[in-house]
Length: 114
Image (cartoon, rainbow, N blue to C red; front, side):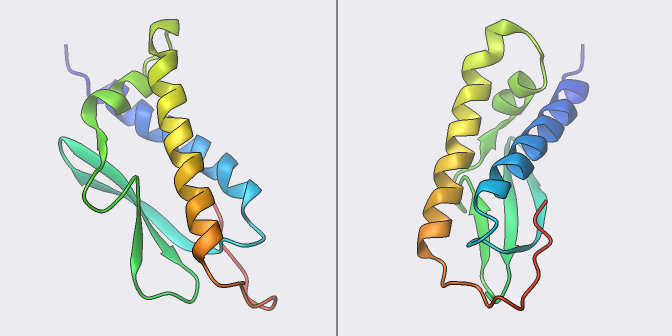
């Protein structure tokens, strides 16, 4: 059986968690846009922060979420709770680190936070 439906469901789940976590940082971390960067077997979120030219990657440029992590996140079974918790913790930590390092946004700038 193909794991593609679970892979896509995992990307959707991670995107939803990412959007929820971004709300906690919306005052300091202005995200102009974001998209998935698929480099099977690694996947990462690619962010464009308002006012910055360089792209930002979650988890990082050289390290992505593994295919197995996405499949686990897209499989709604208690056996995969640990994988989902790990991915959520990674997202939270990376967003917190980014929020701590970006300059304060211009109050007149609008964000398209997810």
